[in-house]
Length: 145
Image (cartoon, rainbow, N blue to C red; front, top):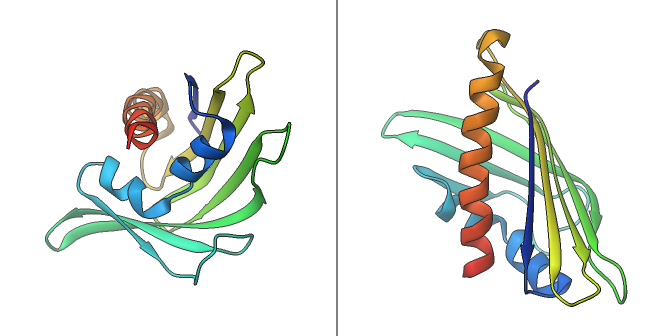
């Protein structure tokens, strides 16, 4: 599976960064041709399920995800969420870790291992590059509001 690793610093404190990065519906606004469908009643917790649906017209694919670790930031510590991708087309996992910085603000670690079924492994480097570009753009947009 191609590994995607992004590290980003923001002046937002961990709680502010957390609320923006775990607003799952807004993820769909930041990824082209995608909308997010929340399938579990709020609030987000372990077991929350949502689907990112990407495509145009009748040509779409779903990327269903389940929250398997949910640790919001608390006083003096960062936050961590792990998602498992449970789709037929996209499989793997994603993690968002938010670390407080001593000088204020936060450092975000976004990690994904994903696999597109039917795509040969020889294309993994291209998938990883595209993923880094796409998720870096989404991350910056989510933090901006």
